[in-house]
Image (cartoon, rainbow, N blue to C red; front, side, top):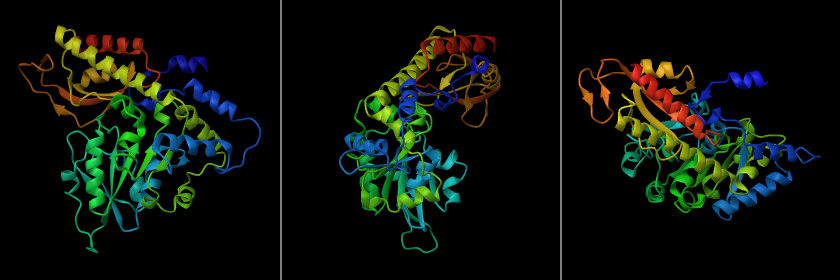
Length: 375
């Protein structure tokens, strides 16, 4: 096993590349003693309800599930009749990265292009129409992601504006919170401040990307917005028989401040990476790298030459994030210090995790400088 560990390529592709936090491992081991009632009637899941209420307010109820896709799809199903549709950004995880799972379950997605992954009331209105028209799937839920798939943040005021707009049209607001902890750390706000207090009706609470082995939860903030969740969770194969081990992971994170410590560290590592690149561009040691989004949480989005990206990936895994585009030939870009060579450029995503170290960042920065100089 040590050989397998040593052979692994260090990952900046996803915060899912990280391992499990030792405190979560310890919580799983501690939950392994004795017998507990199955299917969620255990002491751990019961205590989780109190912890969730502490974060989101009285009446908030958590439904632990296995993964983010299951959380999002099951939550949306509980919010919609069979003829309902969901308005979302075109970059939303439910649209791009869940393999058509919402559509397989009969959920119509009405997507809107955005420059930064964020919806506004005006963007929602591009698809918020046709109520009563039997030929059109009825827009009944708006789904947003916090933080977004482009690493950007909604302010509490922006979420409140969306919630009020949705509710004014008889729609509900769903929030994909796979990286909700990173958003809270960046905003320096409690979880409730930009969810329940901002008008969110149902959310998916992330754990796996923030140190858990495999633990997410659907959190219902307004009971009137969701029906049938116990049956839908079972029907979607998201009901754990030994739920105590899922709930124990969420307790390790949220019954204390581990969720916040992990998220803050991941965010800080992304800022270290961005600041290092900016410094390299300024002194000329890094060339041909330009940012495409703000770095507000734990993801850095940038463009660089395709051949540079491929060489970097020999030691550091990361994803291309958009279609390749021709590089502008000739001249130098003031923003990026780039000498135009007419090469293919790619947008890439570099993600940091709770276990990303300063040494990881510094080694990656040195590789970026080396490979961009060679190009």
